[in-house]
Amino acid sequence: MSITLKNVFAPTPTVTRGKPVFVNADPKGINLVYAVGSAIVIRNIKDSTVADLYYEHPAQTTVARYSPSGFYIASGDVQGNVRIWDTVNKEHILKITLRVLGGPILDLAWSSDSQRLIAVGDGKERFGAAVIWDSGASCGEIIGHTKLIQSVDIKSSRPFRAATGSEDFAVNWFEGPPFKYNKQLTTHGRFVNCVRFSPDGNKVVSVSSDKTGIIFDGKTGDKLVELQGGHNGGIYGASWSADSARVLTASADKTSKLWDATTGACLKTFTFGDTTEDQQLGCLWVGDSLLSVNMSGEIAFLDENNVAKPLRILKGHNRLVSAIAYDANTKTLFSSSIDGVLYQWDLTTGLATPFGGVAHKNQITSIQVHGDQIVTCAKDDSVKISKISTHTYGPSIAIDSPAVGVSVAGDVVVAASMKSIYLIRGGKAVATVAAAWEPTSVAISPNGKEVSVGGKDEKIHTFTVNGDSLAVAGLLEHHRGQVNSVSYSPCGTLLASACSNREVMVWEGKNKKISGWVNHNARVNTVAWTSDSKHLVTASLDGAVLVWDVVKGDQPVQLKNAHPGGVNAAVWTTENSFVSCGNDGAMKFFTVTFK
Image 1 (tube, one colour):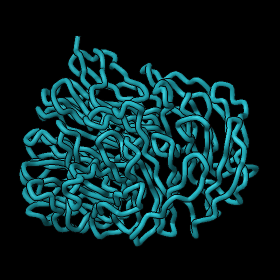
Image 2: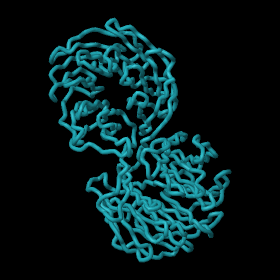
Image 3: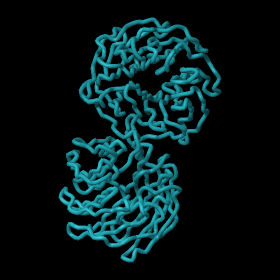
């Protein structure tokens, strides 16, 4: 057997309220690049199912930018590291690591010859540095600011100029190389969030939390024009059109605006919703695509012909994905992250539709699909049975403590909390069984007659379903760690289980004959069956996914580092394809070749 990565549904950018987010693109306008968690995402602009993730930073990433040659990416993190790595090879070979600052790198800029790099941010000794990228040697000083530098850019044509924007309200002007401080432009009254030179190098724009944007001469730094009829909130992002004639801005006033770069006149205002999440914290103009990023990390592709409705919106997770489920009827995927957001994904386009209504108030721990119903449970002490067709949450079914799992068979839903097991019919709990041993997972057999509940006591507790009641049936006692996942095979004759002691077991028949393996290097979070009951996929904290041949009992095929930081769940979509999710916020689609 072998496992091959097919598609990636990438996480959206990490965002922080009141701070700009920088999304950049390659010189050819094919891919976006941005930071999320401890990874850097390279994402195809046209095809949302195509993405790559770079995981080599030792800490949370902050920003990434392609070199003008397109051959390298420079990326920064909160520890002040800048890593420069290859974009051509799949392995993304590291060229050099530079410890530039003593704190977070907040923005990066390349010179047009792809030889020099300026990194800015926060640090104890300095707020920016200019270096020759392949040696780390200094090529100037980035000085003159009294507070952290939020943004930097370098003029694309000679003579080189650089501009920085800082929380000290100033834009500083540098000439070089080597880059030397020339003057300070004290034209803003609040934090300067973004500075960007026009593609032709003739102008540079700065935008600020004081709600203003100013365009300067790209060679001298002299003020040319102020953006007129401005935003009603702080401006966090600015980006130029390819012909250097217009500027796109993004603001906390929940709009993005298009400006004439010569007159400063506002040409168009793009509107979004009216919630806090609709604040716009970044933007990018790449080719014919105008992008704006909101406070949820969603990337909207703006439509100049319809300012009230984007062409499309890239929604998704930017935190760990805790639960997924596949619906064979609609051929769509459901997912939820630690923040409790529930999405349905179109597997063809890679676009997600969120559920509306009264959502769970905490992390969703399990998702199950049955017909037009999707059953979810969460750490907010509730179970919800919602409609897929309307993308609307159903009412909450209260339970006594955080939910650890749900399972569905026919019209029966079984749910487990940290204290009890619930039998649910018709949207109501009809039976409750106390469980002092603390349940950790639950499954119901396909015929709805048997329930297995994994426990923190390292045992599997079995029950029989008698109408609207649950009766204790027995114990399965061969695990040596808390049982994190239990799953009945579709044929109904096998039960698979996995525990925190790395063990995967299959229990067969009435006598519960056991087959067991220990191949993971950390706790196993999920075990899932193919529809023909012949293969299992397991997901583990060790970052690996394993595929098992239950019939042959051979050693599993292993894919390491599927999700660095841990794989939380995996489900089969066909007999030879599965999808996994993890702490990296991504969902990855794999195909399996059975030999």
